[in-house]
Length: 107
Image (cartoon, rainbow, N blue to C red; front, side, top):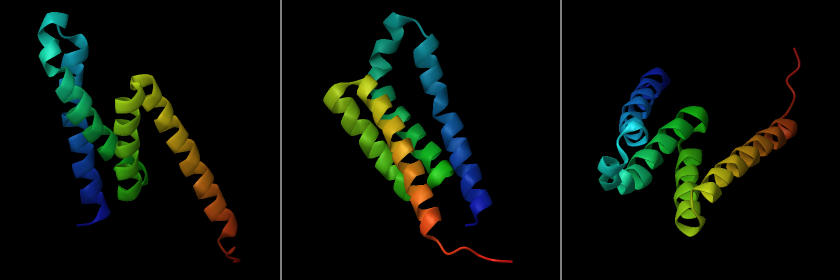
């Protein structure tokens, strides 16, 4: 499977799994309580997984979901969001370090 096809599939997964979250956000509070755990533990992790996978690859995507779920279960949604910010910062630092250590190509 080429990268274009993989990216298209991940984009559609990302979009389709967003629909239940929109229903959860904008639905009646009395009706959406039964969907809360599915949104927290299925739909959001799948969206995080597909988004990270499109952005930076499969390894980072699995790591992002693991960090999200671990932080959410241990400390709540605030810690989970902060963990994603920290993960992005660590990934950018890793990219900068890798770029500095790669040999410079001269033309």
